[in-house]
Length: 352
Image (cartoon, rainbow, N blue to C red; front, side, top):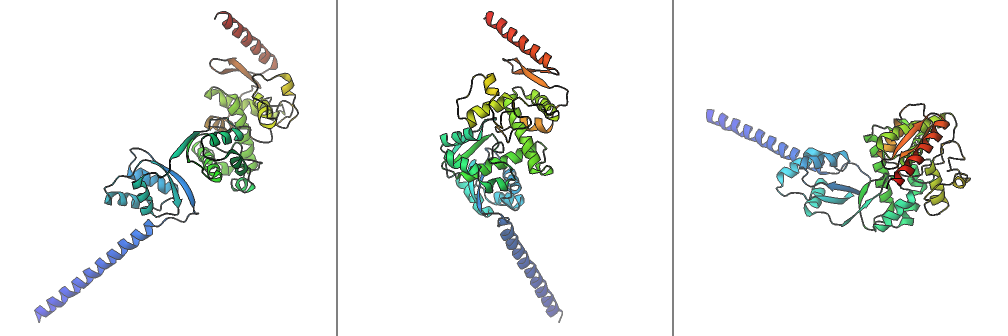
């Protein structure tokens, strides 16, 4: 009888353990299926770069942060279970995709040869389009058409006619013949990411307020030469705006000449140029121009959101070699600084 009870108890224990084992297997399978599935995402293509020497954990962390995968920890488990290493490079991921699919793509390596293109700070939308076409990434006219698409402007809440000023100047990697809409999206997304990195919260401003800030930043971008002077220049422009004094930025005159009138870039700005009647000419029209005149970088953007407070109303180039400017409070001091700079130039030329 005792043997029978022992046997019955052992059978019960085995049955319970088997049940736990099956439950454990079910949980593992269920967890594997759940975390392997992509998060809720809009179908599309996203560019992702795996850096040389990067660890599985850092790759997973970035994938999770960008909303490509659900869990970086599951990504790390997959890496631990598979001894093969993923390959560095830039990938065009078709989303949604499972973690296994993404890992498989990373094990094979990038499929498409990517073109590197550098968009310098301070360039215009038209120049950006030319650089993209030269790199065989997309047609310049198709790019400009997308950058003026009302739906794109609505998506990013840009109250202007184009994305001028909101496509961040940087070095990008794109496949050849890449859809212009994805190029614009990548550059616009980068712009707003950079604002966040600069501790600038665009959501705290109305679209119109942000547009004005970016417009001023695009002018500062074309005016400053030394980084530490950018914030002081932004302060000067704010001082002028506060007293309804024209900004008188030569950069806006250049924009009128090259981008609106389609003329070659001027070597010198003459008085007749500053008298051109155009809304973008800040010599004749007080206040900000209708929109940005270039693609501002981080220095100019930070300067406009964090200007140096001063009572300066003027600045002019003081040293052509270093790019430093002389800041002054009165027009008389401004004129004197110009005369001193001219004399300095003449003296240095005679000494050559």
